[in-house]
Length: 129
Ligand SMILES: [Zn+2]
Image (cartoon, rainbow, N blue to C red):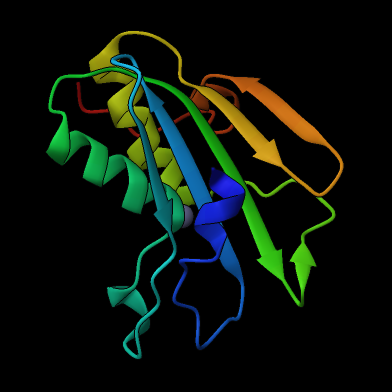
Protein backbone atom coordinates (compact mmCIF):
# COMPACT_ATOMS: atom_id res chain seq x y z
CA UNK A 1 0.00 0.00 0.00
CA UNK A 2 2.95 2.34 0.60
CA UNK A 3 4.13 1.58 -2.93
CA UNK A 4 0.68 2.40 -4.33
CA UNK A 5 0.70 5.67 -2.38
CA UNK A 6 3.87 6.85 -4.13
CA UNK A 7 1.80 7.30 -7.29
CA UNK A 8 -0.42 9.81 -5.50
CA UNK A 9 2.51 12.09 -4.60
CA UNK A 10 2.63 15.63 -5.95
CA UNK A 11 6.30 16.29 -6.62
CA UNK A 12 6.86 18.79 -9.42
CA UNK A 13 10.05 20.07 -7.77
CA UNK A 14 11.91 17.00 -6.53
CA UNK A 15 10.32 14.24 -8.63
CA UNK A 16 10.91 12.06 -5.56
CA UNK A 17 7.66 10.26 -4.80
CA UNK A 18 7.32 8.97 -1.25
CA UNK A 19 4.52 6.75 -0.05
CA UNK A 20 3.57 5.75 3.47
CA UNK A 21 1.06 3.22 4.77
CA UNK A 22 0.05 3.27 8.41
CA UNK A 23 -1.68 0.31 10.06
CA UNK A 24 -3.88 1.30 12.98
CA UNK A 25 -4.87 -0.83 15.94
CA UNK A 26 -8.46 -0.91 14.64
CA UNK A 27 -7.30 -2.60 11.44
CA UNK A 28 -7.62 0.44 9.22
CA UNK A 29 -4.71 1.35 6.94
CA UNK A 30 -4.20 5.02 6.14
CA UNK A 31 -1.85 6.00 3.33
CA UNK A 32 -0.08 9.24 2.57
CA UNK A 33 2.08 10.68 -0.17
CA UNK A 34 4.35 13.69 -0.18
CA UNK A 35 2.76 16.92 -1.38
CA UNK A 36 5.12 19.64 -2.52
CA UNK A 37 4.46 23.36 -2.87
CA UNK A 38 6.13 26.28 -4.65
CA UNK A 39 6.69 27.62 -1.15
CA UNK A 40 8.78 24.66 -0.03
CA UNK A 41 7.98 24.73 3.71
CA UNK A 42 4.27 24.55 2.89
CA UNK A 43 4.63 21.03 1.48
CA UNK A 44 4.57 17.91 3.61
CA UNK A 45 6.00 14.42 3.66
CA UNK A 46 4.17 11.17 3.03
CA UNK A 47 4.65 10.03 6.62
CA UNK A 48 3.09 13.14 8.14
CA UNK A 49 0.30 13.13 5.55
CA UNK A 50 -0.61 9.64 6.75
CA UNK A 51 -0.21 10.08 10.50
CA UNK A 52 -1.97 13.44 10.69
CA UNK A 53 -4.88 12.14 8.64
CA UNK A 54 -5.04 9.01 10.80
CA UNK A 55 -5.00 11.02 14.01
CA UNK A 56 -7.69 13.32 12.64
CA UNK A 57 -9.91 10.54 11.32
CA UNK A 58 -9.37 8.05 14.17
CA UNK A 59 -8.41 10.05 17.29
CA UNK A 60 -7.03 7.94 20.10
CA UNK A 61 -6.46 4.83 17.96
CA UNK A 62 -2.92 3.50 18.30
CA UNK A 63 -0.54 3.26 15.38
CA UNK A 64 0.87 -0.24 14.93
CA UNK A 65 3.07 -0.21 11.83
CA UNK A 66 4.30 2.38 9.34
CA UNK A 67 5.72 1.38 5.97
CA UNK A 68 7.65 3.90 3.89
CA UNK A 69 9.02 3.68 0.38
CA UNK A 70 9.89 5.92 -2.54
CA UNK A 71 9.80 5.93 -6.32
CA UNK A 72 12.09 7.93 -8.58
CA UNK A 73 13.12 7.87 -12.23
CA UNK A 74 10.78 5.08 -13.21
CA UNK A 75 11.30 2.62 -10.37
CA UNK A 76 11.25 2.14 -6.64
CA UNK A 77 14.44 3.26 -4.95
CA UNK A 78 17.15 0.66 -4.43
CA UNK A 79 17.91 1.55 -0.82
CA UNK A 80 15.27 1.67 1.93
CA UNK A 81 13.82 5.15 2.46
CA UNK A 82 14.03 6.67 5.92
CA UNK A 83 11.85 9.45 7.34
CA UNK A 84 13.24 12.97 7.63
CA UNK A 85 13.94 14.49 11.03
CA UNK A 86 10.64 16.37 11.22
CA UNK A 87 8.69 13.18 10.54
CA UNK A 88 10.74 11.29 13.13
CA UNK A 89 9.74 13.86 15.72
CA UNK A 90 6.08 13.66 14.65
CA UNK A 91 6.09 9.86 14.77
CA UNK A 92 7.63 9.96 18.26
CA UNK A 93 4.73 12.03 19.55
CA UNK A 94 2.14 9.46 18.42
CA UNK A 95 4.28 6.60 19.65
CA UNK A 96 4.29 8.19 23.09
CA UNK A 97 0.52 8.79 22.98
CA UNK A 98 -0.01 5.12 22.09
CA UNK A 99 2.38 3.95 24.82
CA UNK A 100 3.89 1.33 22.54
CA UNK A 101 6.56 1.26 19.84
CA UNK A 102 5.40 1.77 16.26
CA UNK A 103 7.02 -0.80 14.00
CA UNK A 104 8.62 0.99 11.07
CA UNK A 105 9.33 -0.66 7.74
CA UNK A 106 11.80 1.19 5.55
CA UNK A 107 11.35 -0.30 2.11
CA UNK A 108 13.73 -0.36 -0.82
CA UNK A 109 13.32 -2.21 -4.09
CA UNK A 110 14.62 -5.52 -2.77
CA UNK A 111 15.16 -5.07 0.95
CA UNK A 112 13.24 -3.88 4.00
CA UNK A 113 14.62 -2.61 7.27
CA UNK A 114 12.31 -3.48 10.17
CA UNK A 115 12.71 -1.09 13.09
CA UNK A 116 10.97 -1.56 16.41
CA UNK A 117 10.07 1.96 17.41
CA UNK A 118 11.04 5.45 16.27
CA UNK A 119 13.48 5.94 19.14
CA UNK A 120 16.01 3.83 17.23
CA UNK A 121 15.94 6.52 14.53
CA UNK A 122 15.75 9.49 16.89
CA UNK A 123 18.20 9.23 19.78
CA UNK A 124 18.27 12.10 22.28
CA UNK A 125 14.91 13.31 21.03
CA UNK A 126 13.17 16.50 22.05
CA UNK A 127 10.42 15.63 24.52
CA UNK A 128 8.18 17.89 26.57
CA UNK A 129 6.04 15.22 28.16
ZN1 LIG B 1 9.41 13.88 6.53
